[in-house]
Length: 155
Image 1 (cartoon, rainbow, N blue to C red):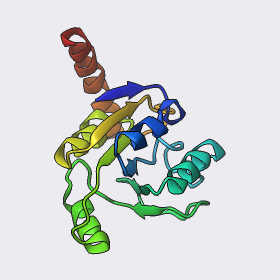
Image 2 (tube, rainbow, N blue to C red):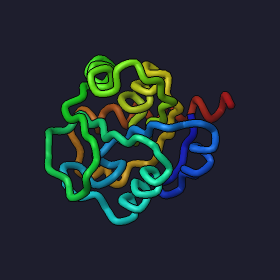
Image 3 (cartoon, one colour):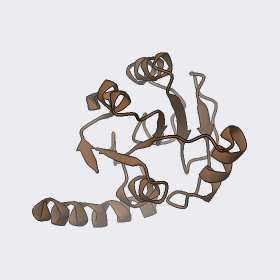
Image 4 (cartoon, one colour):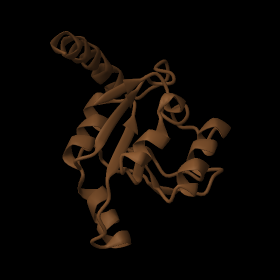
């Protein structure tokens, strides 16, 4: 697992050069604030770069469906960290095609654990804003901080 401050700190060219070809993004607090509908320009530029390099992009979110200002595949109400809805979606859309996945998200217990289940390279970013979040997410973030401190001491 790699940890960076924000999505724009990720070296996407390096990941593509390593053979990663399917980029999965969490939405809330990864791409934009919780419950927002906009893809910020900075993220849109990254998406365009990935598309130009023949990569697939999928936003996988536990959030409710919303209409975005950028044409990108989405999978809402995904029930992460469980992989079942995602795997059904991939199988239905792409059949038996093989992909090298990267998951980018702000939560250890949903996004990163989901990445373990689908055998993805995992990149954890710092959440954009934790002041307006679902109650359970606030509790999980406290456990996440403890676990991340413990993991840093082990490395």
